[in-house]
Image 1 (spheres, rainbow, N blue to C red):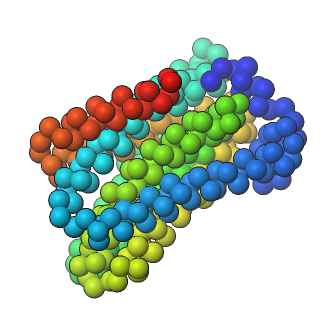
Image 2: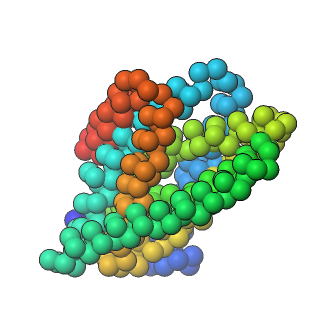
Image 3: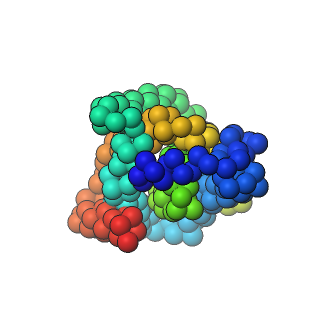
Length: 278
């Protein structure tokens, strides 16, 4: 996105919720409403669908999850490198934009790493409490993890107001796809621990709820001027890069040691590039 497009977005009245600029007060609030609906579908819908899929497709689950993880990782990588990072640099102040955006990317990576350390501690404690407790703690860990993912969607919307949120919808699609195997990971121990299908699906769907809060927060921060927009987009990009290289791809290759996840990742990159550049 060019600097002129960013400045164009600053015209008009502001939304009462978080100062979102738009042609009218109603327009700004309508954008926030759209973000809430889209992220609810990506967060709660994605994990809930994964929970249901864990019951419907119990055989061959590892291979299915591996392919989904790799495809989502490829799409994330394409969207981050071809879109979010360039928007972050263009939103920055002159010659210092690249170093500042790079620093925010590293900060985003570091933040997710610290979050991973916290989640690992929770999961280690859950392993001693039986399968059902493990599933509940896994759901809580994913809920915590979904907050920054929601911020990525919100920041993408903020960076692309002139294009009616195309970047945000694309990122929501990618994260929703990535949430399906996460929902499956939650539902499997819940089912093995005696939870009913309905209870397991509701629990996995609830784990996606923080995505909505994160999206609104990321959008509000991203519309508070080019400087904050650069930091928000850079941090979101770093978070997604850590998720791709630190979580999705390693887990995918662990689940299925065959060419399938590799080809799925390549297909994901090509699909993501096609959507971004198409």
